[in-house]
Image 1: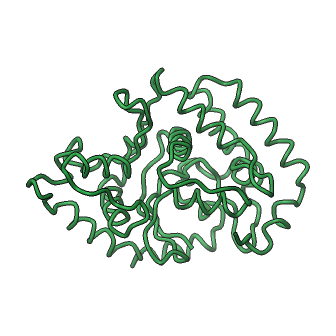
Image 2 (image 1 turned 180 degrees about the vertical axis):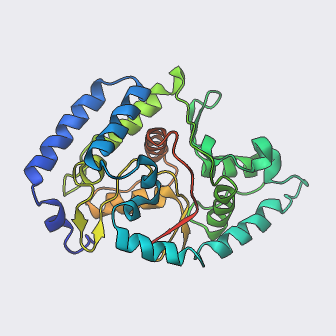
Length: 286
């Protein structure tokens, strides 16, 4: 595992205050059982931290915090690197399975403009279902082999489905049966782990807006809006769980498989925190 140069130095500027705040946030999170109260407090934290930045702007990640890099990114969006992926995904989405059905037969509204409804808690399966998991469940139901979650095919199909959902707003529900999954995701977010003993909240709440090497740490609110994403370091479109793996590895923690229950629950929590925010995926990042 390779830790990014400068990672420790960047985060440990005022480390005592950061870790203390993370502990307090974790204690508060453990006692809270109301997802909507959690979300309102989450949003208020960022409004207070960045009073001059509209909360909706955080859908653009760190570019909401760095005007110069935002201008460069907007210029790049004239010829976005994910454009080919969207076109390829559109074609694959309409290719018939061996039984004659297509992905459209598996989803509401034929799979168009639905990403704002994922992930959701499936009452029948008693688990959180992400878009990627639903795609593979669709394939299995139609006697097709599952796709590797890191495959190009999964990336381009989700890129197309995300593209059709642009402009929609997250409306994630947490039914009573889904509270345990939500709480599990919340705990994962606030819990410190790995050799560096960091949490998601330590970087993206307490240290958000600070520099990590040459990059600004983004706010967690809005983190779920722009996936899948074309990352130049990947040279491809990848999903949010691929990013979870990177984060875990960077702090010296054991990474989990994509679409593991823990990562799906984490995505569930993060996406609920972004309820009401506009989807703008796929996106591009370094």
